[in-house]
Length: 337
View 1: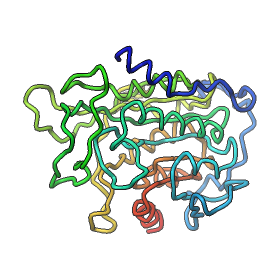
View 2 (view 1 turned 90 degrees about the horizontal axis):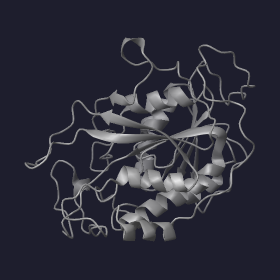
View 3 (view 1 turned 60 degrees about the vertical axis):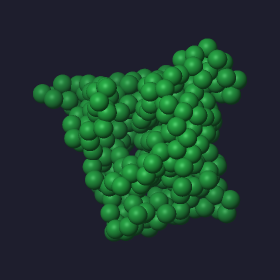
């Protein structure tokens, strides 16, 4: 990272010094080998069955804040504004993947990652996470999936892609200061360091390896077949069920996860289907490790709603926030079918 770029980000990003609430009683531990000494919160719904059926739909700027989360909630609007509608410390874990920088155009004015610079992109997510901190439980966690990208070589647009129209961009962000054409930018770790500076604990880097990744049309570097998933925590001590998921041969879970990509949802059969879908396997794994049945799972960049579907399947309550109205409708079709 260049000195000029680091300095500009330092000016842009507020450092969050405050902590919400008292130090949690629950520590990172192997729950399979110790007794639960912490009173378990009453589940919002019975752990025997997923929370199916009705959900509450809210709109930013229209609906009043909620006093409690007694059923699934879907919010249409900007993530930072929508988080203000949720009660404090009501969410146990977050599983999310914000729009990647300089990779896709979702054709909505308020989107991040399309025409803003890299520093502004990082700042936007960090500011949203400052608001998110209020709604996260004291022993809560965040799973953050972030994709990397290359500099554009000062190209001002990206031509349409017949396989994925969202890859076309009428305006591309400028090459960040200090980087050269064709440089790998390192977006995930730039964002992780900024969140760390803002007070979050960066607890783990998981490499999501995609065995079925599509080959790239490049001839001067290896084809990319992985993405980064960070485990972040609000406090030093947090809930983590080490026995919830095992790796190969029954060993403790490693930081390399082999998970295939999954086809795009085709509920509408049209062009509004989401072009970037998180695999259900990835969402399930994260939810199982860092939440209990009946607790609330949040995705502030809900996209096609995969995190919400996985939470519902695992008997968790959920909250989804999505900016693009067409994707809000897509989520509703998927969760009610």
